[in-house]
Image: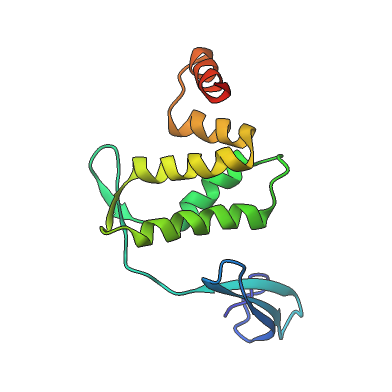
Length: 149
């Protein structure tokens, strides 16, 4: 494992534990050269999922895209990184349980929306505005009205 700070390849594992979801290992490491500490996560790799985009293209599933989208939606909101990681893990686990390896992007977006709605309404609205491609204020008003019913 290379140090993200100096690039040195020798690191020591200080602590290992199973993550809360039980699907990965969290390891606390220290670089033997610069002595800086960092955290890594080790997960079992499941089947390769393909995402079917709106235009019909297929691309390999990337959990980091989900995480980046949720992080952006939760920016400056009281949502912890652990909660964001939890949402990402839950979506990935649900996808891996499906009977198919080809998943429409719409399915993934709807899963994220459902999970965000439970966590933070503002983050939900932010994610929805990008995912559902809100064009103007009326789209925001419709989404808010639908949510409050």
